[in-house]
Image (cartoon, rainbow, N blue to C red; front, side):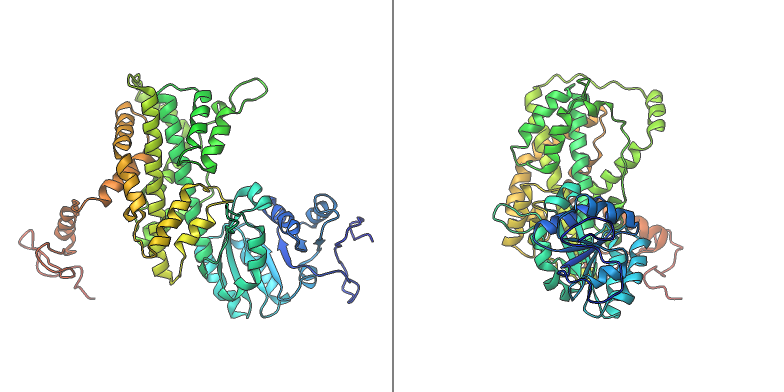
Length: 506
């Protein structure tokens, strides 16, 4: 039988309102938005035995899809949202893969009138978690269920197995779990890289932190690359071999792997492509959101913050070129043991990577208390263990740390990570010191080391800072010789009076 697009498939689009004409099996799930991620998720779902109904605002995309990649597969093309809903098993499950922001709100408002209590809406885009908190409450108020699901892995992950981080209405999880855990990535023991994260916006929050850590990992790798290129004079071919070796160590990860491949990739002229790419980086905002969330929670997410700012600085290309002429400098020739120093860079990279994750996990723990989420921190590490951009062997160590201590306050306090960091400190300091002396910018490496030194210092100069605040603003201070929670004020000038910022009431 031919469908409305003139093609013959096992699953056909239905574009009429006559009841009983569609006798085929209804779809297990519907998906709206046939861009790269949406289309590949549909193919993934179908390959795992699910029938999928699809709709796109531009129906020509539906036609193209069902005539092309979806031809002969258990995929139902719909020409309207109503038709999409009519072709779904109850409770209906509709996954929205549209641009984050107003488009999601608009689609929700279009879907609610044609759905029933108990039906489930799923946002699989990169939505900001406060929006997901708001949408969960709104959809639940209409009697339906809502899932905000972070999906990581890009095009390849969507097709072959992404990391998935669902949160929202807990009652929705049993209905979507079989599909999500079937299509997600699996680790060595076949454990799925998908599990319930937590209430309302928890899934998208964890995905946001994932993306922030991704910013940090990428910046650290880029700084190691620049240090070897400019500080040691290594070629891309030499660095290709170095990253290949690093990928056999604790740094074994997707990002190290693709860096290896990038450094070895040549065009038809035999020239290394990366050397011809303009040094201006783009960003979509998730790293910025992570930094803002950290500031809101009072968490020192310094490495990821520097990674975001490094992208901002890179975008100022013309200004940087002008400034470089105004402040010329020559990187000194490295005279030490090059092979030994390369190993020190590897160790410094690993130490800095540990700091990035320690900061990210601290942010998640703090936010969980703020929003009342019950996060499974070891489970999150497992979700990130495969399928996603930051997947690495290293994440297994994080899971082990939280398996040992569910209340672990900071990764640095785990025996494995504490011992590892101690062994890496000399190389870490050596690398950062050389970079600073040579004039090679390494904001993420230095931020990581400064955080470590600050976190492991029992005494910081905040006593002076608090005295300054009390001097000009009567903000009070605590004393070392008094119990915590008892506040004092000094009339530093002799004419400031006894009124403090903490006691004043209008």
